[in-house]
Image 1 (cartoon, rainbow, N blue to C red):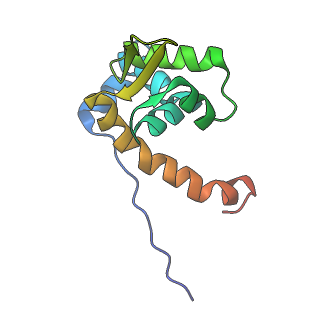
Image 2: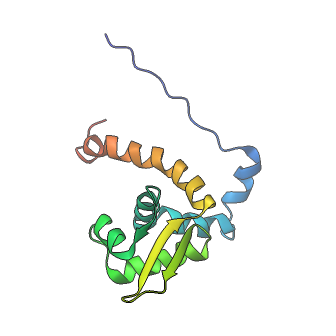
Image 3: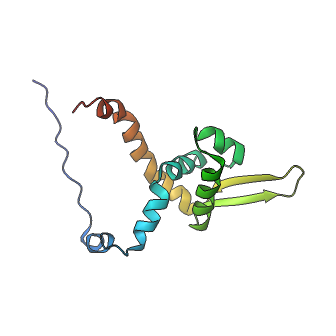
Amino acid sequence: MGMETQVLPARLPADLSDGVFPAGCPSRTVLDHITSKWGVLILLSLSEGEQRWSDLRRRAEGISEKMLAQTLKTLERDGLVLRKSQPVIPPRVDYSLTDRGYELSALLIPLVAWAYNNADEILNGER
């Protein structure tokens, strides 16, 4: 008979519990930006180092140019991604994470690893 480890439920700290659930909480907007499918993938990709537009487009397979541009602008506006234009011909733009972006990506990596490790069982209806 195998011993299963019981995972105790995580608890939201009391000071956050009253703040994150109201409709007008600013954290909802930030969560929407960083937990979108493309937001997570772009942040994870950039956690590996500076990349060009074409690198990001190849890495986040299936993303449209429009969605890549929109996601990068949002993450840049949020102070998570840095856009650096190089004055060369043809034009070159490099993207990297800010310090806050690296802090966030370190938190996202365990979430994405969990999703990756459990996806097959979940999608196959295994419990």
